[in-house]
Image 1 (spheres, one colour):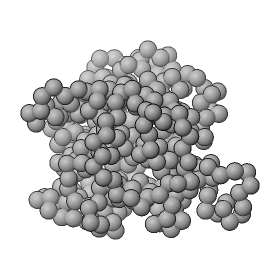
Image 2 (cartoon, helix red, strand yellow):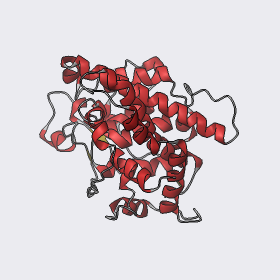
Image 3 (tube, helix red, strand yellow):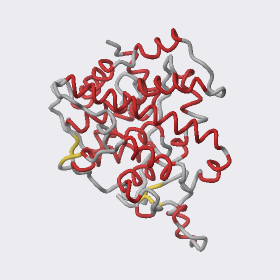
Length: 314
């Protein structure tokens, strides 16, 4: 698998040959491109309530997932203002334990939003012209991230772990979920990256890291978004939300719902006894399945996650 390059990292003297392999950053391509994975149109009861915060006020969707992943891996609070060289992106990697164990504190996440997302070349001009959009975007995802930290700490406490700090429990491996759910770019790039990140000896199998990632995806799209929707009521653009409506949103956003969906998802991938290990082609095929009940495509879509939470509510 080759590098994933973007025109945004090139100079104005780009040659015709370079133009072919370095397309516009809103349309990334691998040198060895794959057939695109078609999407599935999921609908959940909460989609309309979350529409503005997940579309109009969401800059993640205007960033390539590959750019997001590169920035996330390279990021540290010390180099937060350094410009990323997206021409170095390569999906031929397998993440080691430090990626999952490296703390991504609340302050670090805020720096990541301010310096890596809101200053991305593809949206910088738009950000500068729309201060209110940037404010709502930041408040949305800082609130979502606080909710993620809270639920991850509760998950650890349910295992008997004491004194878990919700402000430091989020790791980079958890933050990967933002890119998978909300960033743009081809679906196959996300699936290839997931496989490479979680594979072991060229196979993907069940692991604590993978389950923790799944839990993060489910929390962000449900409890995290519900928390943000409640807080964003103060903005006239978003509008208020009554307690009964909020209660309905939270019905499938409890930790036990996300924990249960982790079990269900692992079963879909690795079989009832969780003993299967999959090659890339086998893993990819699960996302191409056109059955909503059997497809893994819901992992790439917040509506899909909420659809599955409703279907598997406990």
